[in-house]
Figure 1 (cartoon, rainbow, N blue to C red):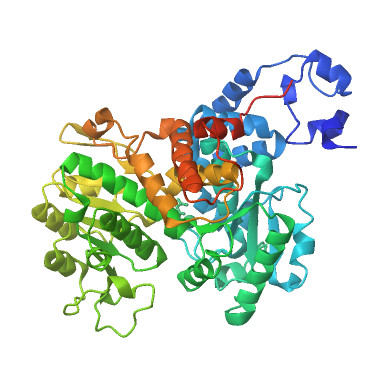
Figure 2: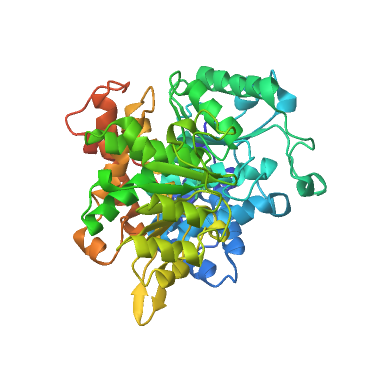
Length: 541
Ligand SMILES: O=C([O-])CC(=O)C(=O)O
Ligand SMILES: [Mg+2]
């Protein structure tokens, strides 16, 4: 019996087919549902309103997360209808910051499983485990090994919350059909002692496997995915730098794949900068950026900004030198002995500087970007110095979740005398200072990865290139209206994320066709192609 023909109780307990109280009289009789539901019939709109009413009354965000997660397991259409009805309200719950707390408490709040768990104890059998997934045509995989979940560190198998949340947004924000999406955790152990000591921890109870054995397991995963799902894209999420960079380098020219923390974050940061320049009326080649944090997110942003500078004719090496990095050991300068290959292009030819504020004074950046995962490092002195150096300092504390932000929105606005152009990775509520209201921007990769997923899905792309992220950044920035800019908004409003994402997906898809990387024929109307692929949360008749 195919799932389309499921009847009675089985149909009510299949999240994709369930309509709950929205089953019509005819359906109730055809599917053997009579007596299994209360007699009244509700519309989808009423069901959405009922859930909204329930959720708004709950006293904390983790409870809201759980109610939504249960809904996703019970009635998928309604879940996405709820998310799409009010993305600005629901994104912070299914995604950052609340998803971070859900990952931390994963074993304690665990209910129904979702996705595929690949413990390294199953090495040699990854394909067999993946084959247990009920869908046979998977197109988009988000995978983590849980080692660097947002800025929260090693959460082991609890990291599964991230692929689940990211994929929910691919569907809610860009219409990628949920049946093609697969969340995966590669479980090689955890070095988080508190988790290892917790009787409710759900992952492998061992320290992390490293080196050749680790990479062989990742290889086995990639090979199995290629065999089972040849049209799929793999999105790497929240790996530690030591693995994120080599994994991306290993596969980026072999398969359709990208790292959201490196490339997605880069795209969204560049989008924010491009829009900021419309406020300051400056050119990108006049900018200098100083990054707090020199990991793969920092170098990813620095590289994409450099490419955008180079596009306007600047020498790429000169462009890279305008993007300086600062980490626990100070400014990355050429004389330092602890610099990794991926950081070297950004090393500055000058004396070492140990204090971040001294680096700000010496380099006179037009913008500072925080990707350290450590809160409060954009101190009052740092922000005040930026405000002395610049009429409109760009201040982007990008670490997630909100508790890890390098400064709060209020601090940035207050300490800069209201002159900061501010964007954070996770959301901050509006602030009022001296009678003036500021609505903080959220520069999160949610503007990028759902749209990227949709473009790759619609075109069946073979590879993911930096040009696609440059295109995505431009496509986001051009959707910021003059009215938005006048209100200091440098990203399109979150309320409009769906329309925004479809536009970005269309532009990226055009780039994919231009680069000859599509596996479907180029249509006359690329927007129509995207729209024809979009999942809409309405009940089938
Ligand atoms: O999930 C987010 O909000 C952004 C992201 O990828 C990260 O911080 O790792
Ligand atoms: Mg991430």
